[in-house]
Image: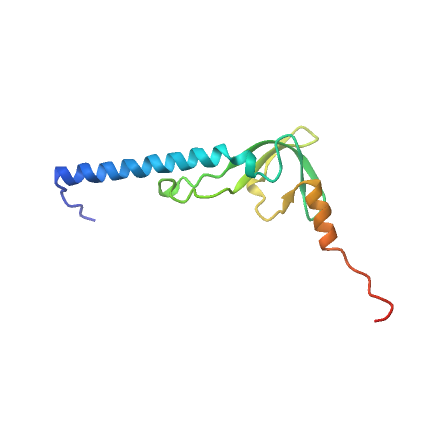
Length: 125
């Protein structure tokens, strides 16, 4: 790739535009991080469960987001909230390596079971 020489005034304009983008991305990242607790399905200090199996995993100790560091954080655009938790045996774990697990509260487990309960056939059938 051959990069052209850019005129000094154009370079200043480009540098200013890039700085505006960096400020906007930093503000968005700070806002997303600030709002984690508001949008987290499981609050810190609460039990976290595998909703499908009903297995209690532990107690949530922290909320975090995987930041999409590539592409200058351009894709760090939403609340994909992960959870750090402490198990009953004292181990620390996190949900980031469990992407296919449906996680939630005990109420989520109960709702999942209610929705997926096998309904008995009526005698008339």
